[in-house]
Length: 116
Image 1 (cartoon, rainbow, N blue to C red):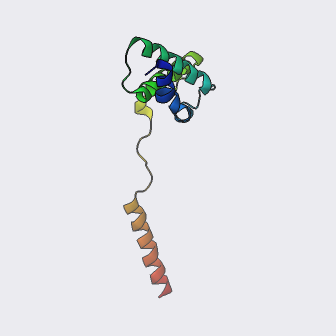
Image 2 (image 1 turned 180 degrees about the horizontal axis):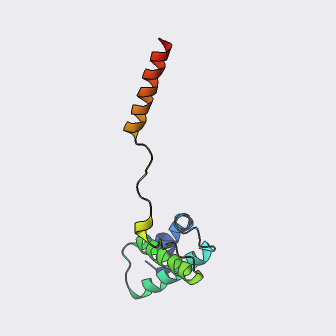
Image 3 (image 1 turned 60 degrees about the vertical axis):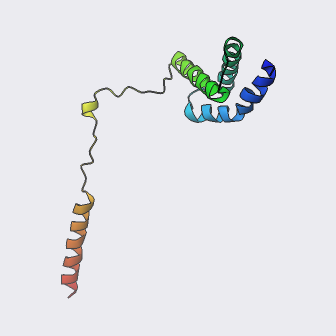
């Protein structure tokens, strides 16, 4: 199969799905079209030098790498450093379900006693 035909059938056919993936996974990337075009270029170049067995998987992997590169370049890395993890509150210190049920039962018993 000719390279341009392969590209149209196996790569470009996933255009709308790729854009949706990028918009959902990388909302900080302002120009998804640029990422898509750069990804297409890289896939095209790779196809010229080596066989690509799963064009869709390769395309999405390339697009993810391009999007991450754009985010790093713009200083919009998707990961925010948390700092001291020991200082983070992990446990909820409020009453648990058993304590809440116990308090409610006592209120119900008191209400029944007052009504009697």
